[in-house]
Image: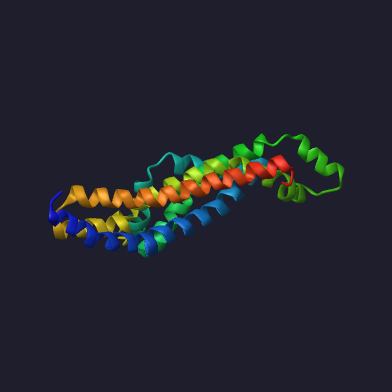
Length: 225
């Protein structure tokens, strides 16, 4: 590695990292939070087997999981303006990532809900609890513990998927890297550098995931949850 490349890497590191901290991380955090709200609602509708709403939820999951995330970004950012709906890049990316992740997370949570023994529902009714109380106090907490590892993996995957937001002009890490490459024309070095920064972010989340799983396991052993 020659001195010029080292100098470029040192100069470009903060220029890539800062967009990661102020764009990539917030984009991931906001999108995943909204996705979880959507996913829980969709999963509970399916679990409760609510007539027509269940079919709408299945349609939503089918469409979103059956089409590429990149195409969904293009539809929202480039397609909707043709029907008069113009959304700024960052909110558009949040909307697409939330809706996309919500479909996948809904299936994870639905499966976790169905893994809770049916006897738990009957026990709740026996002590005079309503359906909503049983779901909120008994079923959902157990299901979320079961779903936690898969949801954490989805969060880590979303950090990497946010790189696609650069195609709709969101000024996140990949966009910053493309701009630096246009300036220096050192694609190998610069794209390896941004890959390293993504790796750092995902490593931190992996450690948090491991810590969370250990905490949940310890609570289960103690019988406190």
